[in-house]
Image (cartoon, rainbow, N blue to C red; front, side):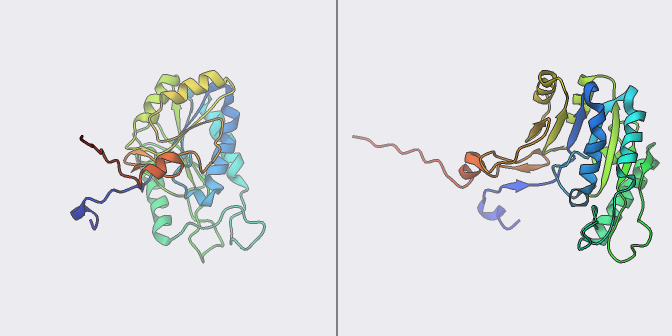
Length: 240
């Protein structure tokens, strides 16, 4: 609002609901993805692949592996060297995780692991690492950014179906594709509409620009594109 009266240019890095597509040849890696998402800043990362797509016929197996992966995560104070998962930032953020977990169930999903406050940790805003099994991409837990240790899992019929669901989102900050067939993984990534697409992992660099499309932001940070956000183009004409 302060910039609007004078038409200030803005660079905005906003929210995300990043898709993570696992090709049929790499479903065993989905459990590690779920573990990493839940334990990275307690899931409070806008680029984290919280919306996981796996083949429908392998979904039950993947969910079982994910539940096992997060089952023994050490939750506690950050000063405890054994802690793997700390609290979320505020009571409001924990309430948001609780709200969307309940909303997912109300819309036909189910809690496979976690989904509540851990016992014995009354001081602090702790929430268990949570795996949600939802029937489709329209589920609230698949469409809204939760920003907590919550992973939503959706089954796909084929890769075209997976890409269509990945793109069916108001957000477009980041996306992830994992596959042993690197060509197929790369070609799948090319079809995703997102500010960043990471195939078989990501390498962060100050030379690579970052930013979102759709409701995930305006402009770019880092790299030459980030510098250009602070530049203005002038057309200079000089007559004889």
